[in-house]
Image (tube, rainbow, N blue to C red):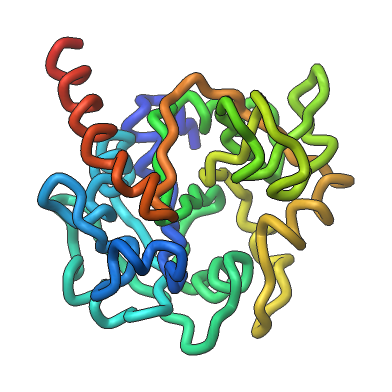
Length: 250
């Protein structure tokens, strides 16, 4: 089947998964009565900003991986967001980002899966990102973005062919560099290789183990936001206000 008929047709054949089960302990001084994915930004739950980005890409089915205060997330978001169907995969004990993604397998209805962290946002063109992933015929692609100081996020190193060669942990290096923006395209077979029934981290355990078989970075010039701390959460309102202003003037 030719999935190049249109960008919207192409992306509508992809299931999106949002990792939204974290406790959000660092954010509690600012947001203590709800999971961080429901933290209010410009009068709306943060998750809705991610939903809007997915809708704009043509996604019509998103799975939300829940954990901490899972029922609150499901009640707030419901079965649909506009034209997009929402499904819920709930962990009852902490499973880590990799374990939560593996648990969501029964809800995934596509061979290519778009995975997003529920507490960050990057303005990258996700359609172009998917085209790059498809054209290279690879199993894992990571969206990368440049920041002035990588110490908070960790640093990603890659070669001239955009193949990832090393991940540096948080605090290892400071200064300007490329980081993992928390958005990925995975092929279903790679997702199914994640061990079932136990906690495992995408970032700390799986990505380093996948380097040998090939992980590729997609470099984006998009703006990046992470609401994981009170300081960065305080920047969210102006971040999305600027996006809306840019959309109107553009």
